[in-house]
Image 1: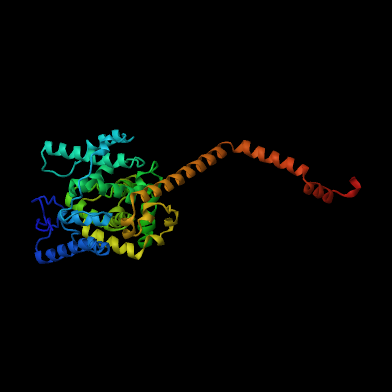
Image 2: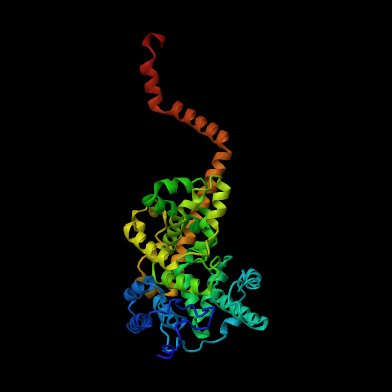
Length: 397
């Protein structure tokens, strides 16, 4: 395989190839690398799921170029490349969110890569803009959200140019679809699962953080932690696990981080300070420990055991992607169909809420009308006449 001879740690002292930091056991790393590449050849998602949770994940970007496409359900050659696509997307209609894309791309690559020249960063930003624009123009039903560019820049840095758009398209339609609807309601419904996870393990901690709404987790979960993780090697390694596992796994990772911070969080009593602390991701996390602990947490308390799971739409990516193998086999058309189902559900919910608001605003008028109609009905009803005859003594007639 073309990438097999590439060094595990990649680009030198900053480890920007996303490789494993621990080189003291090269034979063990070589065995793990061989196992991952063998699983990629066999397209064995089950084995890749196990290896993604093990120490170091997929070890290097060279291996990720083989593993990530398998997990996302498309095929590349031995160098991680796809057959070169066309630029026909440039002639498609502009997407409604392209102005916001430009603003966010201008703010991209804040933390990494740190050794690029201004010209190199400008080239990466241009490539990122093209990547996002191509995906949105080819799937115009998707709505861009702030933070989407953080996810896309990780794919841009890991994958070769020919594989990026396919990977991000499938990621968008099949994995993070809930965040690309016209409303954030489904994304907020995801957050309601976090207190349920915590309650199953640590009720006192759950009660403590319930002083504030779980919106503190939105930035991390909606961007797959790419917005707040500052080291490239860390976010690449974390993506190994998030892509190998179910979409809901990101919520378990966040919950596990909260559990690891238990003592610190009990130091905050004010809801505002608690929210601030929870919304800031610690930069000294032992990601291998977090990921392995989150996997155990998931096994002990699967989504189906959570109280709020039943309120998640059957068309949500949390449920349609509950089985990673099935999700990898889904088509973009299936993703679009699920999107349309969710959109109809959102429209119905909005109409129902508007009707309830209207009824509440006009409750006095509605009550008067109901009472008036009831009075008219009972006056004309045989039941009313019989009731009157029964209740009034005959000598009054």
